[in-house]
Image (cartoon, rainbow, N blue to C red; front, top):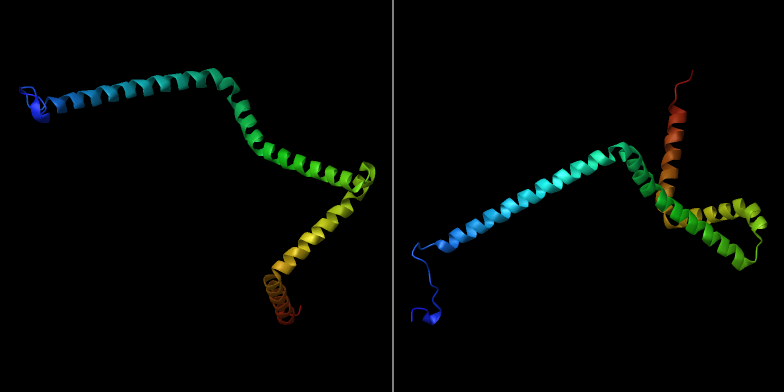
Length: 143
């Protein structure tokens, strides 16, 4: 027996395995190139079919990607506002009438939180701006 001990049998060429692997790689490369070529042809064909509608499709995609998140946020805010009115027992007409005051109250609370959180930069900017204004005012040439 010539196949005992885990030895591999080789053909007489002494390197046929490498040739088989190279041939296999060449076939795979050829198949991939054919696939890429066919896919490219299909893509060009689809482009020519959709070309009359391409401008409208691009605008639809652009506005959809921009406007959908904005619409979603607005819907959430309005729903939250309506739920808040309902929880407080405020009629819709009164809520609409008082909404500017609610907005100003919310904005002042946010401004208050920002000033409390960042009082050092605000004070630095205010003081620096005041110093620059006074320096400019007293050093301005008289006309």
